[in-house]
Amino acid sequence: MKKEVQNLINKGEMLPLMEEFYTIQGEGAHTGTAAYFIRIGGCDVGCHWCDVKESWNADLHPPTKTDIIVDNAKKHSGTVVITGGEPLMWSLDYITSKLQQNNMKTHIETSGAYNFSGKWDWFCLSPKKTKLPLEEVYPEADELKMIIHNMNDFEFAEEQSNKVGKKCKLYLQPEWSKREKMIPIIVDYVMNNPKWKISLQTHKYLDIP
Image 1 (cartoon, one colour):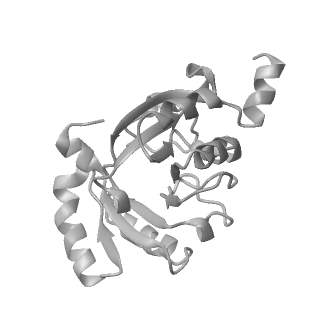
Image 2 (cartoon, rainbow, N blue to C red):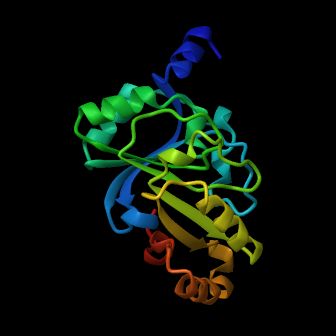
């Protein structure tokens, strides 16, 4: 990679863009909301059930000027969701500043495994056992979204919920391939532990991106 491109990436003025699209937020606190999604390449968290493994290798996704990404987002929605991959692998100060200067709300979905950057209107933290969040990330969380793949994940969810602030909304979401087995168990768990809410991947039920 050319040195000048690497310098722009380091400053967040270019990002390894995998895809960008306008759709309906399918998960968590903002389910049903129109949003422009920016998916950034690069991830080493390694969730075995990840449904976008093609995002893992950042080298497959060409560095794109951040100003172009912002201009594209401005055409669509007042809410932008930055996701990955693992978006916090990159500096997000520049892109979020530009988006907010254009009166756009900035949301992120992250494992929290990398240093905090960016200015966020909504911070969705989704911790993974394979690479835990950094301690500095927990206080930033507006939403804790725990993926439930097996029974052990409930204990992990409780451990993580003890680390976020009181403002944080707590969600349990069935891993898609295990949803038929896990949904009844999650329903019972939430009824017995009402601090939690249920999140579903409604975009998959609706067959939209």
